[in-house]
Length: 91
Image: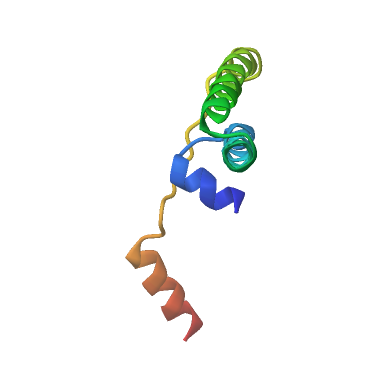
């Protein structure tokens, strides 16, 4: 799963990806809870507060932990000639 994510996004920040997924799930859960139990106005205030805390926290973590440049990851498929030569070696 992480290898596929790395190929799609082209970077090694799996911690960042996991954190974003966690944030999305928690925001959705909070949104539903506030909507069904407290009403729309209070829900809007809570969601705004969560987003503000998330942005400040993530900016701090990003500047401290990920301050070094990341190395891009590229998927290079094998060439057709390599595939044909490996098939001819087997026969």
